[in-house]
Image (tube, rainbow, N blue to C red; front, side, top):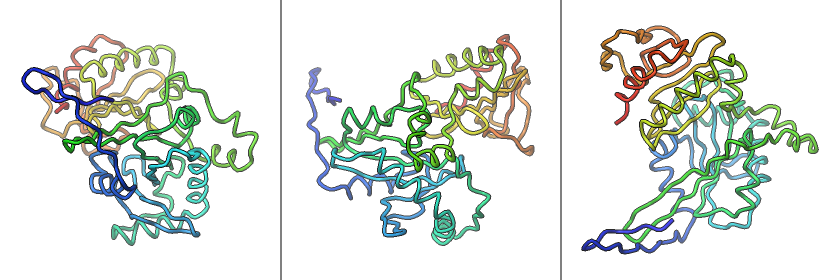
Length: 302
């Protein structure tokens, strides 16, 4: 990606300023982990079973541990290393919980963690085509994040998205006993899974809301979770959609008392247990209120 600065109506290209050390990248991420990835830092340089993890983080929304590794060298197999770390975590769950509790002074229990949501993220200035292709499976728990620094101290961070047509890694995992064990235990939720668990009518309705929400802002990202599909901007859920058989539940990511709902269709669920985030719940069985509901969701975008 080329970065330009406007100078006297002309574009002046800003040179890239490469990172000299992996530690520089690590310091930037760990110092801004919530802003970049929406994660809580647990420990830097966590060593277990003679393996050193660059960054151990926790996803409070998914209730899962995340391992982050930083790379300046392209000549690595991110799949092999990623599965090694996933296996390490799944075989030593208690150690990760103890580290979390000691570092954050909390009382996390084994059953509080959704181990199926465990994942590994690699961060590097660039990845090879082979590395990108090797992780382009819809259900592989490995993420790739690119980071580049420029001469004017601008930093560009980009998560490499998997294609919507990405295939499943499970057929390949059948050939390797260890990969199969990990692939069977870890679940990477997708939009297709949620749509398949609903009805054809609700799946079609979801697609209409999906398109409408994405049109509200070009920075909105989709993050399927275990019980719902989150629509995020700046790592904050603006809406969560739960696909059921006969209706679509929509949770608007607004605090109680902050939503201007003239029609009064949003229900207060601030004191009621629910899967999605946000204090307002809306039920949709058709698209009759589509534009109005989108206007409510738009209020949450900063």
